[in-house]
Amino acid sequence: MNHKRKFLPVLFSLAALILFQSCANKEEMKKIGYIQIGQDVVLDIGKEGFFKALADSGFIQGEHYKLIDNNAQGELSMIPTILQSFQAQGVDLIVTNGTPCMVAAAQVASQIPVVFTISFGPEQMKLKSIPTNLYGVYDPLDVSRIAERFCACIPSLDIVGIPYNNSEPNAEYSAKVFAREFEKRGIAVERASVTSTNDLPMVVQSLIDRSVDALVITADNLIYRGLNVVGKMAGENKVPLLVTEPMQVEKGAAVGMGINYEYWGYLSGLKAVEILRGRQITQKIEPITDLDWIVNTKACEEQGLVLPPELIREARIIH
Image 1 (cartoon, rainbow, N blue to C red):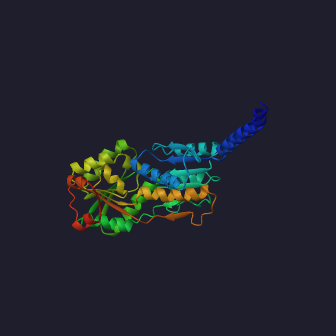
Image 2: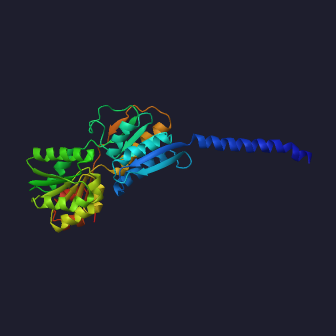
Image 3: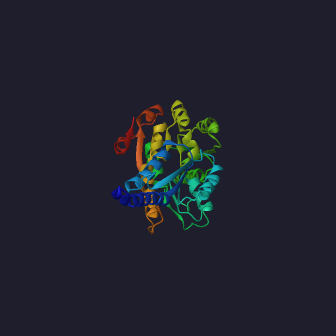
């Protein structure tokens, strides 16, 4: 009995130490607020890449950080509200997926580190100043290289139709720079604004009625949400559908050239890792320049697009 009494204080001390360490670990767990512009399989791929970078670097959700996951579902007005809720909950890091989320975070969240992905850069979006707490990887949008590839797909290209959502800064910006690039090459451009996915069939049909040789979709979250509809109309009217987000060919575009979203998300995630480790980042914001080239052979056939053999050889093929 005396031996048991002797060990009781030791057991209590060990239990207290374990409880203290458990509480300490909970206190040390970081809180990450994540916001995505809308529900889209391609944006989700960028998200997976981002959190894979964290996991590969030893940051496990539920063990090293708590994730507060939000999706604005395409409602731009919801973004500032979500960002304010992150601040109220005392998150240690904000992660944004989509240009509108990056722009809003740069304006709303000034005291918390913000890492953006799948976005244009703050200078492209004409932000008056770049906050010191903003980090990320952006698409410099190599319009010359992409437009050249699209022109190679259709050597007789005379008129391009570009539908775009003029309420998204990224969509308006990318539509404008591509229009300028095509016009510089002597190709006429027909642009038409879209305000919701419900308007998409009518707007696309209006462009087709203007005898466009191809439909080009640039960095536009709204139109990519309804791309299946656009792809169906492109097939019915034998008008090739070309996109600047290559993975969108899975929704019915004929060809796509642009950034690999998984790799993009991963690179952005590595910046978050450095922040979570408390390290200084010398290059806070940087471009990603590698481009993917993907061909949907079924969509090409349906839309009447016959590609030169060398472009097929260079492509990642989706049947």
